Structures are given as C-alpha cells and as structure tokens.
Length: 370
Image 1 (cartoon, rainbow, N blue to C red):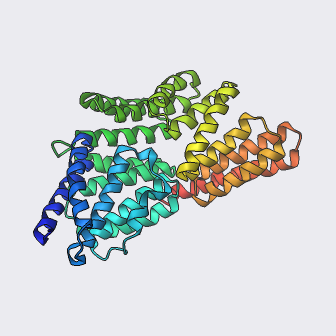
Image 2: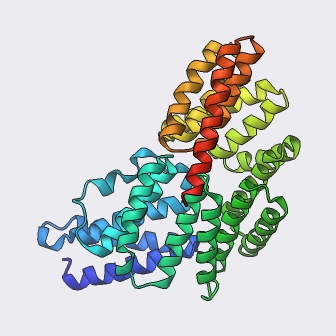
C-alpha cells in the first residue's frame, strides 16, 4: 500500500530527476526515469483516491514532458501536452510555474510564438516561488531561445549572457554553459557576426565532445550548416547538413535548410525529395512554422506560375504575420514581387515590393520597442 511517506520519497526522486534533466545529464535522467515510472504506476493503481496525490501526478506528467523534450526536442508534437491537460489547472505556485514554463516550451516548439510568450510571461510571475538560482538561469536560457526564434537576436544575447554568467559559477553545469554558447552562436549568425558565431560554436562543440554526447554534437553541426547557408556557402552547408540528416532523419529544421540549399544550386530533384519528407514530419507534429516554409519552398522549387505561387505564399504569410515574424513576411513578399516581375506582372510586383517594405518597417519597429 502507498502511504504519504511513500509520496514524499517519490517527490524527492522527482526533484532529483529534474535536476539531472536541467543539467542535461541524459544517462542519469534515463536511469532515474526507469525507477520513477515503477513507483508512479503503483501510485496510479491505488484504489484509495486520497492516496493518489494529484499534485504529485501532475508534477510527474510535467517532468515527463520535460524528459521527452530533452531526449527528442524535435519530436515534440501537438499531443505532447495532452496528459498534462487532463489535470485541473494547478493552484500551487510551484506547479503553476512549471506548467506555464513547460507550456511555453511546448508552444515555442510548435511555432506558436505568441502563445509561448503568454506562458513565459505567466511563468516569470511565479519564478519568485522557486528559490533556486539555477532554475532562474534555466528560465533565462529558454527566454534566450525564444527571442532567437522570434528574430530578436539582441534580446536573445542579453538573456543567454545572463544565464551563462549564472551557470558559470556552479560546478557540474559546464554543459549548460555550452548550451548558452550555442544560442549565442545562433544569435551572432542572425546578426551576420560570423567570426563571433564560430567562436561560440567552437566553445560549445569542445564541451560536447568532452562528454561524447552525440545528440548535442549533431545540434552544433546543424547550426554550423545553418551559418554557412546564411552566407550562401551552399556546398559547405550541405556537407554539414547531410551528416545531421543521416544521423537524425526526422530533424525537420536540417531537412528544410538542406532542401533550400539544393534549391539555390538548382538541384531541384534533391530539394523536392527533402521538401516532401519535411512536410510529412511537420504535418505529423503539427509544426506550423516549418510546414509553411516547406510549402512556399515547394512552389519556388517547382518554378510554379506566379498566380499559383501567390496563393500558397499568401497563405503562409498569414502565419508569419500572426506570429510577428516580420523578416519572413518581408522575404516572402519580395519573392512574390520578383516572381511577378519576371512574368511581367508589374502591378502586382510593385504591390508586393511595397508590402515587403512595410514588413521590414514592422520588423524594425518590433526591435526598436525593446
């Protein structure tokens, strides 16, 4: 029979499990999960509802989501929060923090950035109830990731630096420091600070190679591929991205970037195969951002007539407008303008160039407000 004391022991195990996950110690987290799952199953089998501590079960479900995110962040789908949503909204401040923090991560991974922002902001109001400096560092690190994803590189650098400065004072958190270097590398890539980006990637890669964690090494290889892609060094980018896709076949971000680089090189058949694969993965996960990117790229790769391209691009632009990703709005309006110009559709070409300029102004205003 389960007792209150048993519940306390499970709670201690759950806390330890989260500490291992937060420190990105995958092996240790896996071993703890095996032990915890047995105890949780016993608790779920309890006939006496009084002994089925709902807060404990909710905490477990939250940490189980966090574990799955650690093991396979690119496998997060719309359904990944389903178990958690079966519980009543947490009234406990401690659980409310984790609920909103992890819901923010979930929304972020699906490309629902406005929703992610709402949950991160709610989580921040509960952060005071988590008296743990390392948890604050973790929160700031995820904020850095979020701001990178919504194209606010300077804010991303601010939060990544803040998190790194906190982690650096704790022994055993060198991997977390490396993750901060990784996001700093991404933000520097976005700002076209190539040398600085490479420095951060090199620092992160060095740490990941020390521990021999292949998953993290693949992450850096992808980001190096992305860096070369943004410099139009397509052949070099493809070399890195090919390794990533080979070792991580469902890496929809690498698949998309690789497809785009093949498109740039006029290797349309190779691009077409990758676009199809990327769309299948994104549709399964309900990943909106990369679904729309692939749909637009497919029309470009097929050299579709302007009217057909327009229909798909405008549908995608709705998503990027909604999520305030204005640089992408600008990019796709300009692609439309160019296509119509090439087909002598000068009126629409002029219209879309103008809309591209407006999107650029929105992107500037969004950054200026911060």
